[in-house]
Figure 1 (tube, helix red, strand yellow):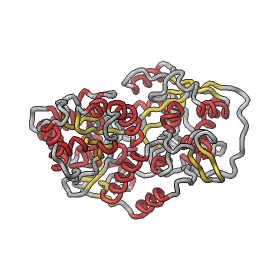
Figure 2 (figure 1 turned 90 degrees about the vertical axis):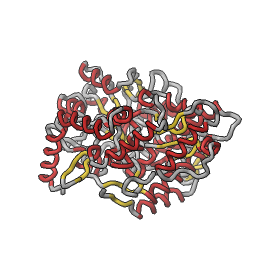
Figure 3 (figure 1 turned 60 degrees about the horizontal axis):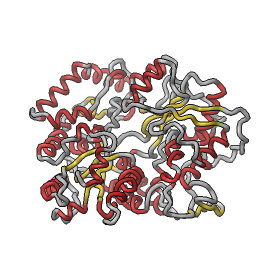
Figure 4 (figure 1 turned 180 degrees about the vertical axis):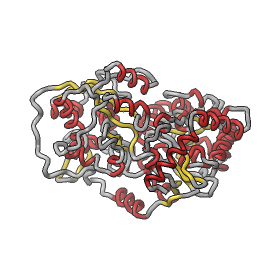
Length: 533
């Protein structure tokens, strides 16, 4: 298995980041001296926005939202996403001309994105972004520039991290260490066998007599974020069906999910399931089912996403502290699984992209509204906005002495205090790098400590399987319409009564019937033409 080792400069960068003094200013954009202090535009505009979890009327009383709206002379009008199949809802809006002004969805590389682009449903960004310098600075990375189609960028990527090395935070496996200890486990698991033994001990002992089961997940699309790491690490997927990575195996490029080593991951998954170490309701788990079970002590471990700020808000604050007010704290009771060795002996963490999902602008907006929307995104990437996002309101949540910032109450969680604003801020990006700073107000000190421990370990101990990212974005006739929903395939393999190799061959045959071999031939021919060896 071809691997790429972590590089020392990245380790040094994270050390510098963690060592930064707690009172220092933390913004990911450099202040641009040429940017004047502009007055609010004279014409008021309503801007409709569809963003997951952003509901109608929830922004009105948020002082940070009010400040943003006043600065730009706009009113943000949330448009509810009312169906779990949000992609279908966006497609319906697109076909009926009812798209909101701005909407966020994970569509890049999908056929419906290409349809929107070719049919003029979405508006490209102007090539000249001089009038929006902070937005231009944000989009200036090579990765983002490579996302252009015919020289134009049709969306704003919602960045998570500066490097895929931090994707380890996107697939967290939390487990009940308190129950493990009560079941006789004295050492945190460092191998698959130890992880399996720990789950078995908890399930067999059932310390709280709750008929506890083993592993669950927030959503089935996260399952591969753990089990693919055993046999085919580059197969980890964001669930969109179109983000599959290409590895070189036996002289040609193939989607990593179809590696000859994938069978080892699938067998591992089946073994956990048949041993009773996976919650039998995992295939139908959705919404808050998995998180509720974990907090209630009905499952021993859970795969979750959303970084440690989601763990802090959705597991600890919203559930654990209410269910266990007199017991030991969440972070004393719970540990987070560190990357386990794969079949080749190396440790891997999940790898996706440096961004997840994109913000699109409807082609129905006028020239003037397009300008105001670009002003909005420009401001959302400015140091002033980032300061507000990280620390709240000046002289309320923090004070400043030059560039030094002093929090009024270090225990205040800005994400929780200004939840509506924090949700809206995700329209621009996920702000993942700010979360790594020790002065970040969005997670608790306990969450920060657990996060730092996991990141330090991952940067020191894990490798990356070699893959060719340019082929994921590549367009060929068959690839443009080809999707791989590996999460559904994993569930089929997991619950099937057939031997793993038999059901997996059947699944591969199904993909071949849809043009898998033709797609592989097209991609390899195009890779050769591009000089990709």
